[in-house]
Length: 129
Image (cartoon, rainbow, N blue to C red):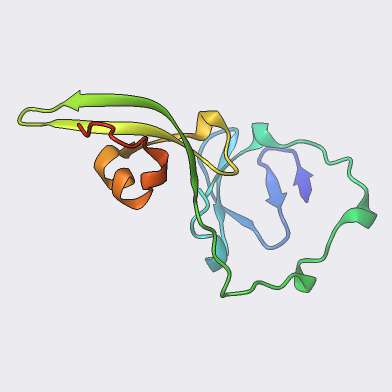
């Protein structure tokens, strides 16, 4: 990465180029096709000097991706319940803790759908809302 401060900022991150200056500290980047899901606005305030050991850098050319791999989210525990009252009905939701995630990353899911897909999370004889 090269950073030249002056009247304007020139920022080179390997192949990335600035497409538009948004304000003094924010720039929009021209991202390669494989990074289209990344937000293109880059804030200069997020820059930090890298003090890493260059011998630990792994060349990306040596990394292969297996197309047949998948990641399955597995629910571990129900953390909370809520019933939201809409105009014509009530919607029951549960807060689910997923494997390999922290408690603050738990998500609210529809109770009935989770009961069908993961019945082991629910105690036998539990009333459905």
